[in-house]
Every structure is written in structure tokens, then in C-alpha cells.
Amino acid sequence: MTSPFDRLRALLEETRSEIDRDLAERRERLRYRIERGRAVFDAEIREAHRAIRERLPGYVLHARLRVILTAPVIYALILPFALLDLFVAVYQAICFPVYGIARVRRRDHIVIDRHRLAYLNGLQKLNCLYCGYINGLISLVREVAARTEQYWCPIRHARNPADPHDRYPDFLDYGDAEAFRAQNKRLRDDLRADR
Image (cartoon, rainbow, N blue to C red; front, top):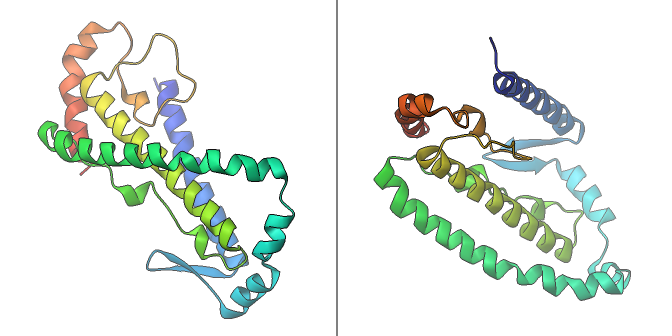
């Protein structure tokens, strides 16, 4: 019998394939292609993008005062996030090899490319750099934590979390001591296969 987690995993894989097909169609419609990992627009499209870019002075002049006043609060978070990035990198470099856990690749999570769009002004590009880095970092940290959890405590919770990570469906049922004893090694070994 197929578990709800297996059905969800199959549905997610199907949905991801559908999203990939949709993105390919959109890429064609918007006239860009991926070359060596970068989006490349046709020259005429780049020129059209530049033509509609809102100039920085006008962009700032039309911004609401509250937005301008809260910007330093948002950007101040770069410090704790950069420290988190550093600590997680050190953690992975030291602990993952000891436990035989495959390292999480940054480039799979931190995607920074929107700053290359010609229709964005300098401040919009900076905002896109910031958001791409922060959200990618959170994704990376989540995967590092998920692999750590799979190694040390691959047990589902008694109460279902709101948004469990991708590894959670493989975890063992809460209270199933026999499964934990029998399958814990297999779950650890699966972390090596990710290499």
C-alpha cells in the first residue's frame, strides 16, 4: 500500500516536471536561453528592457516614506545572515566529513541572477541580490539541518509540522522503536549516496 508521503513525493516530482516544462515555454516566449548557467536575452530584447527601466532618482522620489525608513532595518539583517552563512559553512566543513554526510552545494540553493535584468535600476538590482542571497541561504541552511536531522534523529514528530523538509517523509514513525533500531543505519547510509 502506498503511503501518503509516497503519493505526495510522486505528486511533487510530477509537479516539478510540469513546472520545468512551463518554464521552458516561458523562456521561449520571453526570448532568452540559458548558456553556461546564465540567462541570455536577444539584443533587441535587452534594448527594450533598458528602455522601460525606471531611473533611480524617480524610483526613490516615488517611494513611500515608510518604505525608505524601514529599508535600513531590512538591510541590517545582512550581518546575522552572513554570520549564519559562515557558521553553517564551517559546520559542514568540519562535521559532515566526520559523519560521512554529503555536503550541500551552495549553487543548488543560492541563485543570484536577477541583478542582470536590464529593466531593473541599481537599487532594484541590489534588492534582488539581497533577496536571492537571503532566501537561497535559508534554503541551504534548511537542507543542512535536514541532513543533520536525518543522521541523528530521523523520527517524525507526533504532531505534523506545517512545512516539513523534503527528507521528512523518509523518517520513521513517532513511537516505532523497532523501525528506528532496524532502519536508522539505512537512513544514515542514504546520506552518503547524495554525494
